[in-house]
Image (cartoon, rainbow, N blue to C red; front, side, top):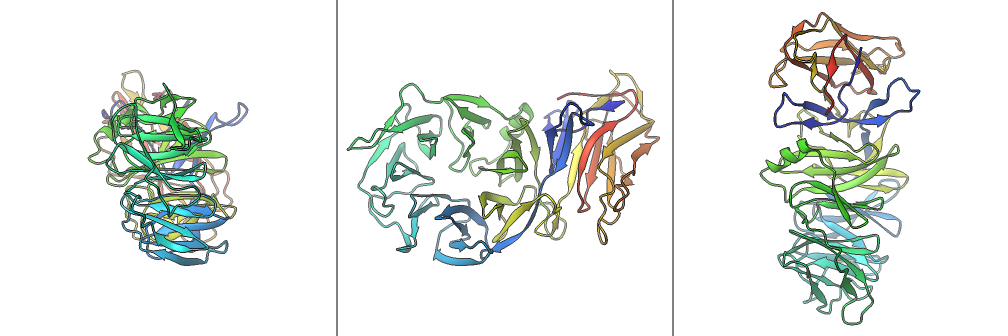
Length: 470
C-alpha cells in the first residue's frame, strides 16, 4: 500500500504528465534497513548573525580569516561576534558582485568599476588607465584576472598588486565570442564566453603568463557573469542553452531535468541568474536563482535531485525565490547573505523560520493512478515525524493541510483537509485522511505545512494505487 510521494521538483510543461513539486524540503537516501528508502527533511532555518547596512548582501569573502561582506554600496568587515564595521564605499549597483583575494588585497568588480581593499592601504577605486570594466575577477598564480566587458579579451593585474596594470591581456582564441566570466578552478583558468568555455594554464611566460590548453574547449557558453560556481572538484554553470551543466575532467554533462530546462527556456530574462554553493548536514547544494522571474532551485549533489526554495516576508507574502543571495563557511557556521536587506544569517537545522519569518513547505505528489481505470481512494496516510509541537504559541498544535486535484494540477479542491502533526511529545499521532472518494485517470495530492516545527516525511500510503515515477 506504500506509494512513492514527492521527492523532487519536476513540473512538466504538461501538468498531467507531472506537476510534482518539493518546496523547502530535500530528499535523502536511507539505508536498506531504514523505515523507507528515501525521506524528506525540511531545509534549514536562518538565524540572526549580523546586520550590514540596508543591503542587499551582494557577496561575502574571507580575507585573513576575517569575513568581508559587500552590502548595498559598502564593504564591511564582520567579526566573529557579528559586529559589522564599514571599511569602504561606494560600490555601485545592487546585483551580486565578484570578489577574490591575493592573500593581502581583496578585489571587487561590479561590471563597470573595480575596487581594492587591504588592511595596509584601505579601500580604493582602481584608477589605473589599463584597468577596464569587468564583471568577474579571479586570482591565479600571483595575479588578479578579469574579463573585459563586451569584448573577447581578458586582462591581468601586475604581480601581487591589484592596483597596478601593464596592459597585459589575451583574447579568447577558439571562437570570437565575448568573454563573460573568468574563474580559477583547480589551478586551471576557465575563460567563459557567450558560446564557448576555454581552459588556460599558467605557463609562467614573461610576456603573458597564461596559455590556452589545446583541444580542451567546451562548446557551450555561459548565460551571465554570476552563473557559475566551483564546488568539490567540479565546475557548475548555467549554459547559453539555459541548461545547468557540470564540467569535470574536461567533460560537460547536463544536470538539470527536462522539466527545469523547459521552464527555463520560457523565462523572459536569465542573464542576471546567479549561483553559489554551500554544504550543510552533509549535503552539498548548488543554488541557482533567477531574480527577474523570481525563482530559486537547489541541486543536491548527494542525490542528484532538485528542489525549490521560497521565502516569505514578515507579512506572510511569498517572495517567489529564496532570499539567500550568497553563502560562505565562516566562524564555524554556514552564513547566508540576504537579498532583501543587509542581514547576514546562519543556517540552523533546529530553526524553522528565516530571520523570524515563516518557512512554508509545499509538496505535490507525482500522479497517482490505477492504470487508466476509475479508482477509489478510501484513505490516504502520511508517515511523518509527529509529536513535534512547540511548548507554546504558533506550532504548539502544528497542522498539516491536504488538497486534492483530479485534473492534473490545473485546479485544487476548495477545502483544505487539516490534520494535527501532534502536540509536543505525542509521538504516536497518526496522519490519515479518510473517505477521499473516487477519480478518473489520476489524482494529485498537495501537502502544506506552515507552522514553525520540524518537518520530516518518511512514507506515503493508500490502498491499491500507484504513483508515477518521474
